[in-house]
Image 1 (tube, rainbow, N blue to C red):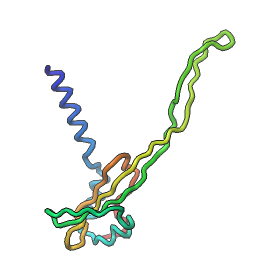
Image 2: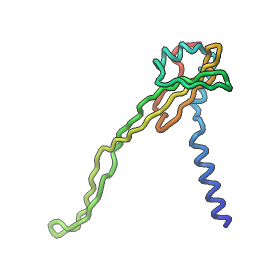
Image 3: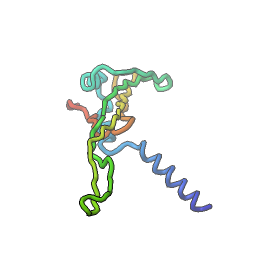
Image 4: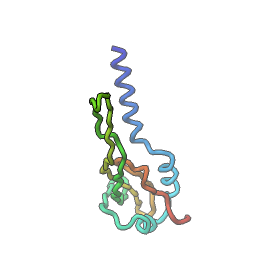
Length: 134
């Protein structure tokens, strides 16, 4: 019984950690805070979607970025006799993984950035640091 409980706790903790921001994202969020919303539009372009958050009196600009990548992987293996000897053969190939990342930029009523974060798969390749100096 204790093993099941311990296993469930480990899985819950690891699942919760996957949604935590990483250090570069936290630093970028801090650098964005208080900047004009126009800088976010200049850096990321026009948003793909705009969400409103009524209780915070803010809007969230949502940008989509494709983060597809290709990785070389073993596709299969076979073992068989060839010329009286046992031969093991592996085949390798490029595998494409389709993934996307969302960048969420929260803007307050004063038209200043209050929060920037990423959601989705493989967002580590997306640079969200501000390009201009504050």
